[in-house]
Length: 479
Image 1: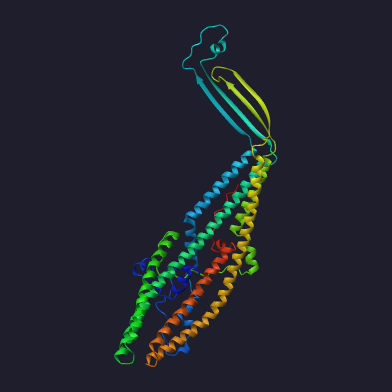
Image 2: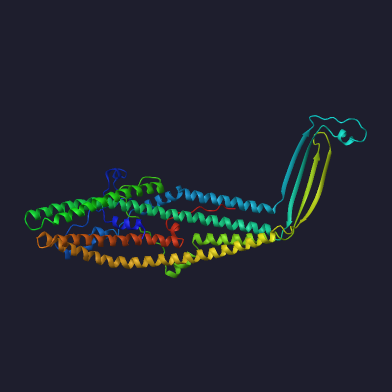
């Protein structure tokens, strides 16, 4: 289980209040702040069997979350400013330029040359016809030549290269969408990390205070002769353990806040609430697997496979002859002469040997590897979608069962606490009851947060996360 989810689970037990420096960052009534922060576990009830689940602050966490609109705005902001998305957009621009380059093979290419020369020193003796050519050459001349070349037939090599470039452009667009999807998931994880560790810091502080109060109560019982002095070290060990946990939580909170600011570009709001539950489309396991076949990762792999097949086709076509036509024109002495020459040209080029067949075989093997990679990616996507769907179903069932377990554990804690209060219970019973209730509460909240996370993961695995979050991924320009 990811460490962040474990932290989220325990964190929801904590208080909404945080360290003073964090609380100053957010005004009251913010849509990102919980309206009724949990400062401690529910008080013990004198009538445990009359507990009303609707009033329980822990159970209430499964029904409350922050405002959806503000959450979506911040996640969109995180996606827009992330360098990974900028990198993907640059990849799209590069692929578009590569497609333009491939398409230019359909049109004529023009080469121009301007050559100007002038003699600096020369000496040709008058020896009749021996150097008549050199003596008649002008001391300086400027020539202009133009060559136009137009491919006529190449057995489809140019069309294959254009198709390969177009497929790579589609793969770049899918990579950009995948990048936005992953950034959105990371942003949500950063949100939960800050929420959880802030609550853990508050919870650790409250637990330490509670253990101190319990130590005072035990000291009173020892003074009254009800408890043995040996009970006090047991409480001291709980206090020391709580202090160690609190120090660790504060360190993890600092790391989480740094990740939040990296993702969102702003400090984390104070008293940050649980991320909203955004309901995606209802689906079966088979539907999840079907949708996974068209998620950005799969679509990108299939586009690269198509590009590799077109590359192989172009490489094979290059083993065959190609035909091109051209015009070569020259103006010699453009300043002081009327001399010029214009010639038509028809060229048939065919390379023999030189490894052309071996290169075509290499391209065919790369295409086979790309096809296999696309199939593997598709199978993995279906598997991950199936796992994500199963997680959602199982966690929904687990949450319902844990709610009953939580209520029973709270009632058991209150019964044992009441016995201890009237001096008919032991310290061991009380500590076990408090620890058991805390663990069951953490397990219940862990199920809530795992269910939240699994829903977002399922949306991602099926390619529905960005539409559900109303996020537009980087798109191709109209061409």
